[in-house]
Length: 383
Ligand SMILES: Cc1cc2nc3c(=O)[nH]c(=O)nc-3n(C[C@H](O)[C@H](O)[C@H](O)COP(=O)(O)OP(=O)(O)OC[C@H]3O[C@@H](n4cnc5c(N)ncnc54)[C@H](O)[C@@H]3O)c2cc1C
Image (cartoon, rainbow, N blue to C red; front, top):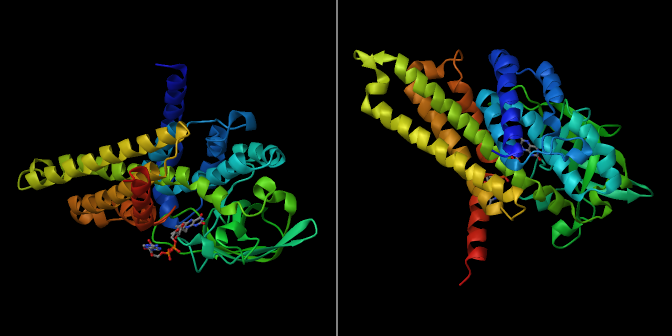
């Protein structure tokens, strides 16, 4: 074992202890009250989770994508919502670290890493999510500032976070439109208005909001990288790791549904024997477990490619597609296997069933992942 392996193992053990001690006992209460986990967030700050993938140079833990994915898997197996508190925050941080100026990095990354400033990614608008080049939020240069007007929707951490990587148009006439798109580090202030939480099927506890920018003024030196027209690249560059995150969430939920089912199948009896001895239940468990193992390997493959600095949009797309569908299927199968109890709010199965669909939509829908995979196949295997 290398020193790195030992360090990673120690981090994962710490995460396991945190989840069993500080998270699991509170999940049902927080989930059903749709309450933000303030105390848990404080412990997450102490653990350094808000700086998990930020370089040590800027105060983070500098974890590899492979180790980070394992953390996301473990967290999501206990409470998927909790992973959202730091996932999109770290995508914002990654955009600043990869594309920001040195001044932006030194001003923001250490405070992102401690969790003093937390936030996320503000890309989606009421009229567009997949087709980001159609966004309408506009930033107009006025002297040393930009003045921003527009609306963002479905923004995670929007209520309790204070800083967002905000995608806007700086030149709405540019062709292709992406050449007129820019990404800002936008902290809450005058003109940055947040509506209350959006009601959701699942992903409870974490805040998802609509944001209105009404003559919101931002200094020009908060344009990420300092150059207009690079915003879509900066935002999408982080989405590969975002997709690996979502895939890891899918593995977590799929695995939790499997483990709960294995346990229930051994205790629930029908016709004089545990249901695990009925062949149709055994087939369900075998299918569920195979999906979990395959999804785990796809996530590992994508994360390792990212860590080696290789292009991995196809690998991340495959992992995201397969793992999120695995979560959907395993949640549905766990619901059937549990009979009426699967429908009860006393167990976690109904939560997996409500949470799983988000992974098929977030960070690019699964339909979009298929387009990305197919494009890459043609590019990598030309005739
Ligand atoms: C709980 C939650 C949290 C979220 N958090 C964030 C966040 O923090 N920040 C953020 O910016 N966004 C966030 N989102 C938004 C999310 O990223 C978008 O919902 C997603 O990108 C899809 O966009 P859309 O909903 O506008 O769907 P649309 O783009 O309107 O798509 C509708 C349907 O058409 C399909 N489709 C679209 N284009 C094509 C095509 N070319 N070919 C085939 N099919 C196509 C899609 O796959 C989908 O099935 C969140 C969403 C949810 C539900």
